[in-house]
Length: 138
Image 1 (spheres, rainbow, N blue to C red):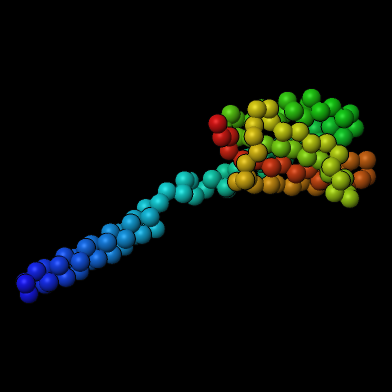
Image 2 (image 1 turned 45 degrees about the vertical axis):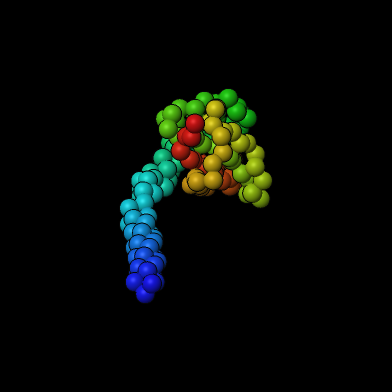
């Protein structure tokens, strides 16, 4: 009878140790080997949005959009982004009131995005272009 009590206690102790080791292994595995994707993904999005805003400003397209109100031109420009990216372009006046805003066709909003801003002058008035870019998700 004495031997059975020791065997049960030893079995419970071994199961507890096994669960503790397994928990520790799972924690270490998650902590060190979890894949958060590309660590430069946000930086890539930032560079894309900054490049697009620079092109829009240098080509005077931002002023053209404000003067003409041509949202088709704005949407066509956004739609030239690679299929991997989604974007929203908003032009705000000096009071931060949106004047024009368009999003890339076929894109849904995401909670992981970057925003680039570009200040420009049109007819002696300051405006700001905001470009929100995120990865396309099916």
